[in-house]
Image (cartoon, rainbow over all chains, first blue to last red):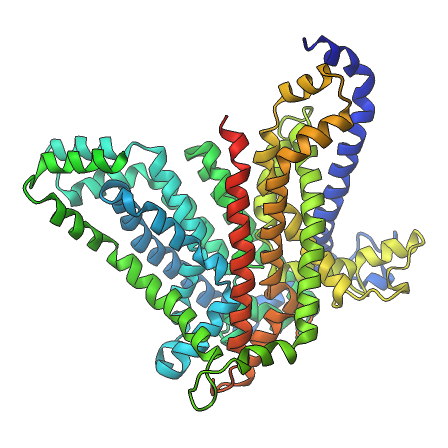
Length: 289
Length: 299
């Protein structure tokens, strides 16, 4: 039956693959070129005007980056962003792990409600959340908004759609009910079951959702900027006004760090829930773009 | 069915006598999660929607909402144009790229590389992305210079990186990969046997795409378009980092919020309310279309 098709294939192959190959080539250029040119700008102190074959290999150095490291705000903004990332990761796990397990074990009826709630942040994007913060918390709880750490719960909300799905996929990939029943019938209480059976089995889901959360927090700009918080991304933009090369160097640093985090996320999620994982990464752009 | 099994298991273990009360009580386990969302998502949302409909004397009014549009007509027009344009181009180019990657057989790692990179690039945005493009296509950019040496003057016309065309170009960097992530599963769902069946019935490649391929992909593509629209419409960081004065709805919301600390003017809240109306419509359409798209995948 398939002979007709296979028979005509060799003659067609080259021309039929020509289009897709051109698309792949163009995509490679479009997606790689900005990153390479940013790296060059950050690491080579030769203005584009005088760039040519003769100057191509001259004056490459880490100078702009190390100079940025000595900026007084560098340390404090980076520390704040890292603290926010750690805080967001912990609050996310503290909130979502018990909830997701509870929904699976005791309240499957609530699953669609919980899933609906976790995708709500798509409808209320960061720029709208920050309007809510300004409208509700600024007049009523000034002390809360004044604290830098007030960003943490909102970052938990931002990351919610994909952190919940990452944890949920991890739970679905193991047979939670059997594990719990086995553990309980051997005499373990709920705390022991959670600590010695469930969490070890869910470690890769926990780790992968943590990487994803951290990457989201390290790149978040909308809420921090509108509330005038000095996190690493807002500092990067500010510093670029002073030294454009230094700004590029910091952006390069952020890029490498968050790509590494997301790369690790992808590796972990693949390992645990092969096909399901792909769905989780979709839409992650909402929070940062 | 799941519910029945669970209830049976639990009933067998403990109090068989009062399963209904137990079941009622089990909702208590969701309290921390629901309370958290209430305080940090639902109440803030209610807070700004309420403010959008109140005047200075706390009376209900529509003027806040209508003023938001009439005083920011350009911002709405530009935001919608930008979102429609980048969503359309993103949907088309993203589907083509996903198809090219999914059907490529030679380097076996190509497909997983494209999908992994899309996961990263769809997350890119804000300061990093803006800077990368400034270094490439800014007036003093490397790409601008290379184009000039081969005879194409990017800045010969009206192109500016911080104007409409420039921002749209930068948005493509996260729109295309997002579309790849959306359509890749749908393209995998196209079965080789359908193509063979079409060929056996005398169909050409064109017939196959027009009568089989595209109709099957269409729900995913339309859904992807809605998702990309929402994604571009709500994007703030990238546009702001390229041009702090960009006349786009998200940038305007932030501008009014920073300008008016007193929180008396309904302007930013009305704009944010319009924002979530747009989001609810496009994301709602996306979820409906996605459900429709999954129909071909399970069989």
